[in-house]
Image (cartoon, rainbow, N blue to C red; front, side):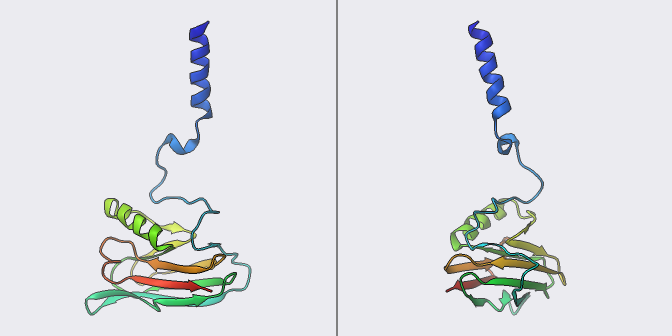
Length: 161
């Protein structure tokens, strides 16, 4: 009797185990859509202010142009991203702390792909868009987390007032 109860409990715990512990998924990573530090994915069907962000390298540094953006709390922005450089670059929008943690993970897995609501990786001459609603006031960061790029100057700030 005791063995059958133990087996039943073990079987139930395996069946009830959350899928997240089953192992890694596809290359890249996912996010809980309600826990982004800088706000939430926007609605592409609603109006948004357009901000074009150019990624490039030159003169011994890597950069975003512009590297400073100001928005109002509650405002929806459509970031139109263009990589004018000769290298792959990415745009990851999050808090400074999150981007620093993520940059460390990228050092261990530099080929990690980003195609999340708050992040895009672009090949040279590539383009992409991110529609974002800034629901939280504060200062946030966009950065290229490919190893060496952030250190080379690919950092920008978004101030939400």
